[in-house]
Length: 314
Image 1 (tube, rainbow, N blue to C red):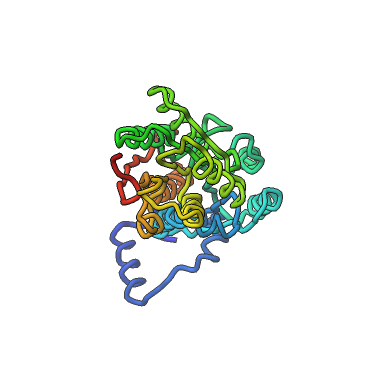
Image 2: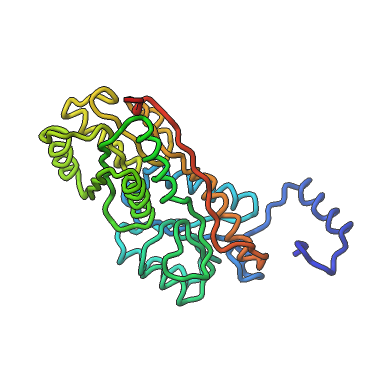
């Protein structure tokens, strides 16, 4: 191997590289793995591989960012495929014990997560996209989701909204809980009611909209959803009840994407820059694996509100 070999001069190294380029030589990764005991592969752990997770634009954008970083630096990625937590635990354990990857990126953040405990117990290099909930010394890349939700609620308040309904996904994941906290904080600051409803299913969602937007005497003027996928489900239910956006009810959500931009109508959303989250995470885990100095334990990626047709001044 000529890479970073102190016994080979720079001039010789450059000649060899030029010859390799001229001949179209591609290094054999399997042979390199045998020599270095490194797979040059990063394991990516998603909370589930169900269709609603796989097809979420947030996940695809994060993965794109990770893969861009890895491709530039000569690494490949391997994604988990388990649909439930029990299978995921055993899948990750097998990846660790078989040494099929050099390190991991955990694509979610969950308190007392058995999978993260497994990574920590085996002393495998990893980082978290999300909050560091279980171990203080673990690197994590995140947005300020409390601040983002606070700012979105403030934006809606300044449009004139005084009754805001917040719909959150189930599952107790940190990102959803933080957005709920940010919403409640702003509502408390301006003395607004902070109605937060956990949505477990489409039937829950239909019942909620019927209760709050059809039957209630004091209806919300705007609905925030904690995630763009829940927002898409909300749009379907509002259509079923023949509620027009923004004339009858307004809507806003998180994670600007192709879906929010091309919904009918286009949705006001918080851009959480998932591609930057992924790119930063990919570069950082490679730096960890190469024993490079990491100057942070937490890095927060900025967010911006993108105003679309679904919200307007009232």
